[in-house]
Length: 156
Image (cartoon, rainbow, N blue to C red; front, top):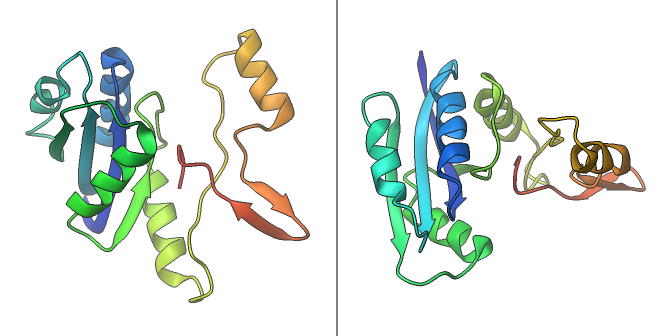
């Protein structure tokens, strides 16, 4: 397993079961990287969840005393990160085993005009919401005139 100079920032508010699924997907990664969980005043202890993974992941928790929202949590994670190259996902996501490496390598090797990279976010289930989001490509990066105008913070 190689160590990537990459910090993955994850805003967290609740969803303990889903947070564990995300962390399990990080454990299955072919690469090691820093994980910064930002607990946005979650009623459930994110620190206790992180402790379950301390032997398998380079993980730490930063906690907000009051809920400030996912954007503020991401900004807190940016400041707490140890590495210059950052990745973001959400605590209701699961990532593929090579997710971190693909984002890292692409950004590392991209021209200086590239500010960020990302990819599609696929629904895990086939319920009405998952089919709606997939059909309308709501969680896809927005492409206009051959350029992506933004990336989705669940996968960037």
